[in-house]
Length: 124
Image (cartoon, rainbow, N blue to C red; front, side, top):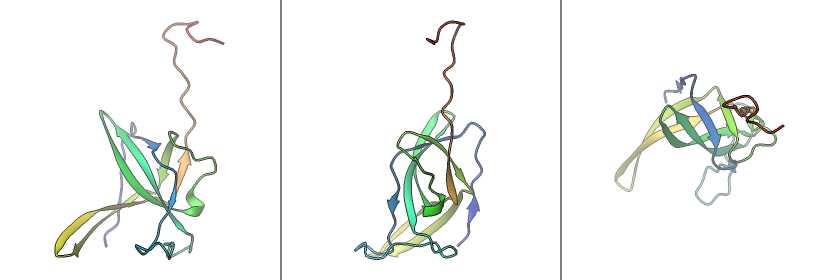
């Protein structure tokens, strides 16, 4: 499958929508998915991509060692080495397709400092 590096605008922001959930290779959830190179368990995180005047939810797969300590819902993050892989399959005679997203890691971003309209607007 083709892996496509995802290019982002400088103004693109990502916010954590759900905490990481262990990914499984089977529907019975008996075999955790692992990274082929590092053998690390894989996790799925729902992120909100916010760009210009739109927002959309994305599920991104990240290896365990790429998840930062202190990751919480609502935090701003930056996916490191984000790739997209188009996929398609036939299931019960129906074509299904989509895009799988994968990042090497998630990086926590410091919250933006509040901006005052005029001097003295912020309480000290």
